[in-house]
Length: 270
Image (cartoon, rainbow, N blue to C red; front, side, top):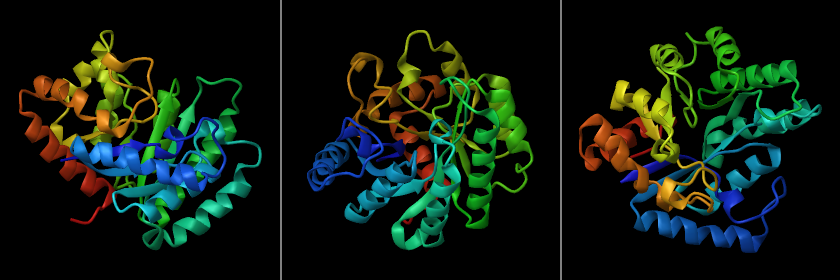
């Protein structure tokens, strides 16, 4: 079995973001869940990116036993009023167990999408780190074109953070070595199948399987064979063979070890 540790089911079933799902859309998610289970993906961590999308994640986790939620504000969604939204995030985290919230995220730094406010992103990121630490929740961390500054922020908390993953890992080996030294996991997605992505394949080759978790980031980042199409959790097994080949193990071993890793990361039952 597989665990998709980073998915956006709420974004698969709608075209426009940052609005609450309709009842029909909430029901439509069932199709993706069933298709995922048929492919061996039995558990999905559905990841928040804004207040509204975090509320959608909570509702999906409430409706479907296969789904757990994380809540947080993505760096690109850290608007001038982010602190107001964060207050509601805090309230939800206070009752995390009853809401099936297992992590804080997707949070971090993104200096790719312009315009951006660097200090605002850092303030927002630090607030989420402190929230995760206060409530002993996993961190799902986003980084794009901000590797050095992200490490600088994380270093302050590195001895306190016990459970974290660098989502959709795309950094170099030096970056990997630092976060692996802190005990973080690397989230591996379908870009490992992209022909030009030798960097990621090398990092995976050099990283113990016990430090990897699997993700789809659906509806984004489909496998090479499906580029240009919407991604789904059911497609997760399509890139596992690449990891197995790089590590010189069976697909079954990749599944077993990464599932164990995901359960430790998010403290999932069973």
